[in-house]
Each structure stands twice: as C-alpha cells, then as structure tokens.
Length: 93
Ligand code: SF4
Image (cartoon, rainbow, N blue to C red; front, side, top):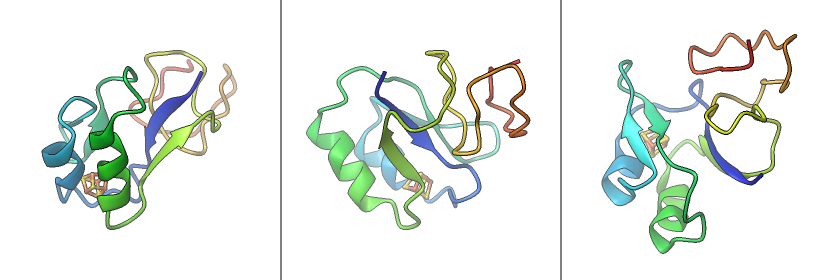
C-alpha cells in the first residue's frame, strides 16, 4: 500500500508541510512532522508539501515503511517483528 513517510532524522520541524497540507501532516510531541493520514495521496497539496520540504524528509511510495497501516516511521523500518529501527512511531513490535 502506498503511503507517506517522514524521516524524523531529516525533519527539522520547519512546518512547511504542516502549513501547506494539514490534511496529511501535523507536529508530533517532538515538534517534528508526523503523518496523520494516508488518504487522498494524489492531492495537489501533498505534492506541494513534498516539493517544499527543505530537507527531503518526506517520501511517498511503497518504500520499506511498516506494513501496518497506522505505522509511519522511518526508512530503516523492516516491516516485521525483528524491526529495531528505534523510531518512537514504529508499530512493528
Ligand atoms: S517540510 Fe520537511 S523539514 Fe519541514 S516540518 Fe515538514 S517534513 Fe519536517
């Protein structure tokens, strides 16, 4: 399933994505961007948010993020119970 991913190691919390596309992004408790929806992935605002991120932290695609729909962690996530990516957002375990 295609989904949005924010790499927390790259996000600097500038807020551009949250301002441009509040349907998909909000700040988490660490002041970094967090994905709040994986619906409507063809929206123009989402495309703008991806293009506006100054660090390239946002990606969209199958990627290797967790197969659980609610998980939107990092590019190190291995999708299984052996995942040790360490993201606070990881739901693999
Ligand atoms: S635009 Fe990029 S760097 Fe800025 S808050 Fe969003 S993900 Fe983080």
